[in-house]
Image (cartoon, rainbow, N blue to C red; front, side, top):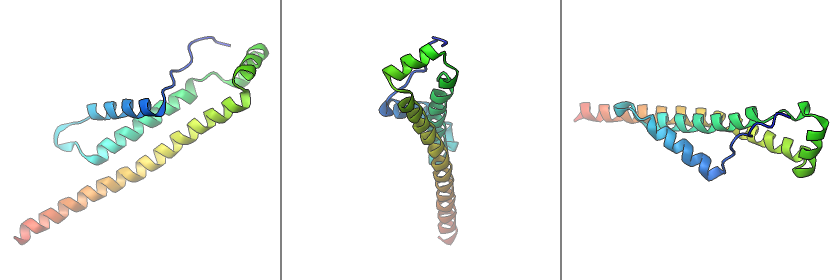
Length: 122
C-alpha cells in the first residue's frame, strides 16, 4: 500500500462552512446573485466529496497484508459502503444543485421582468 497520507475528511459542518467560504469569495458585483452562489456552493461540495473518493487508495489493489489490516481495523465492506455513500452524496449534490440553480436563475429573471413591467405601467 502506498502509505501516503489519506485525504482529509471533514465532518458535514466543516464541509458546508468551507464551501460557503469559497462561494463567498466568488462574488463579483452586480452579477452576484442567488443562482451563482448556489452553483458555487454545490460545485465546491461536490468537488470536495469527489476528491475524497478519488484520492482514497483502491482497496482492490492493496497488498493482501494491507487489505487484512484495513479489514480488521474498519472492515472492507463498511469502508466500501461508506465510500459509495460519499459518491452517492456527490451525485445528488450535482443533480440537485443544477436543478435549484436553474430555478433560482428563472425566479430572478421573472422578478426582473415583473419589476420592469410595473415600471412601464406606472
